[in-house]
Image (cartoon, rainbow, N blue to C red; front, side, top):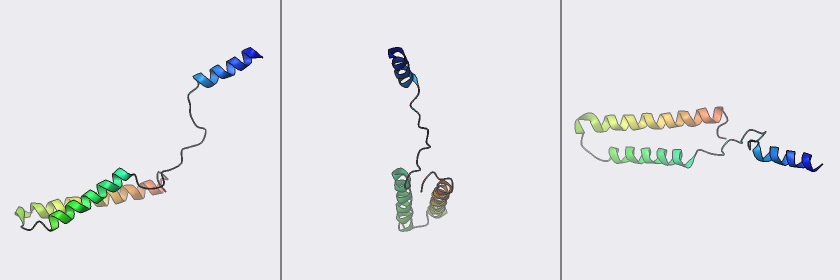
Length: 86
């Protein structure tokens, strides 16, 4: 009986600690993604009020920021559809 108990204990110690159940999806968008979205929106706002044309580069930068925000929105949509977040 003692050998069987020791064998089971040894198996518990040696076996990898994996769950039999899949991990639950995150409840919301990770804070880092949310912070990045806010930073992009702030940068867009700053550029919008910066004045001057800057040879069209300021407007192009604002367009790139809009595209980055759209990509984050698409990433969030994908994560929700694939149950990575709720």
